[in-house]
Length: 280
Ligand SMILES: NC(=O)c1ccc[n+]([C@@H]2O[C@H](COP(=O)([O-])OP(=O)(O)OC[C@H]3O[C@@H](n4cnc5c(N)ncnc54)[C@H](OP(=O)(O)O)[C@@H]3O)[C@@H](O)[C@H]2O)c1
Image (cartoon, rainbow, N blue to C red; front, side, top):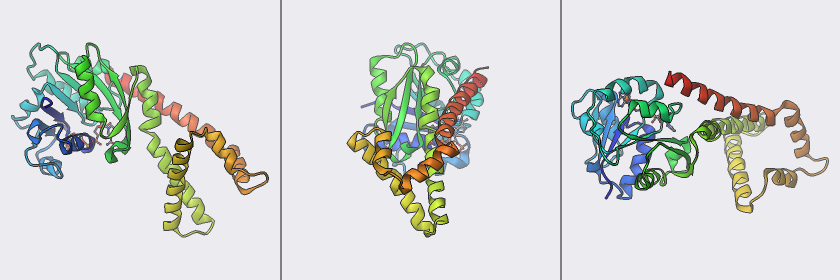
């Protein structure tokens, strides 16, 4: 059985990570100790979690137990990181071998900042994306110094039930995030716009939403199952002088392709900038 886990910030993403582990019996409820920001968040945090999971607010003296766990999942909002840094400096952590493990899912807080805030820990940066909430996510992992083989296994086991895992050098995490973490928003925009187009062309709203969504997921499944390059699928659909090539001509003219390319480059730059600001 795994060691106990202290969850600092038992919000949406932490619950998505912890719940399948509890369901699979990888952790007993009593091994999970969560902290939330305010006392009023304790009851909502416990909803859908099995009896035995303990949750307290950050002001509660019992929160020390989560802080002393050899395995900590940090899942607060990045803007709460300053407060956490102050708090952790007051928590006594002895010199342990191996060092306690701190896994952060905070966007824009790099390993150097984590290591500075948690000096006696081995730190890991994890970048799960929102589809992880329904078990269909992608998680990028960047390992901190001195991580042991056993600790890597522990981390992988946390994210495997909700996502496919990609181990990357830290400098690639911003680009990973720009594609996979921001990507669901781009896709949502595309689905919404395609549905709007169908409404403009005369279809009812609900039907348009459903068809746009299913066209996207069906196309993604076809690409994956047949191992097609996207250009092959485009050429399969676009017959000479037909409707699709007329529409594609307009999309190229309107700059859809370069808009998406630049959007991802911008998101990666912004992520790097936020990490620099947070480390100053
Ligand atoms: N949601 C996602 O899909 C997703 C995906 C990838 C990464 N992330 C990352 O995950 C992190 C959390 O996101 P989320 O969506 O799960 O946010 P969330 O639902 O708001 O959860 C944040 C949790 O942190 C608690 N908290 C606030 N201050 C605290 C303190 N001083 N000590 C301990 N806990 C404290 C909050 O409690 P209160 O409610 O009482 O303030 C809340 O339970 C973010 O850094 C985000 O970048 C999220």
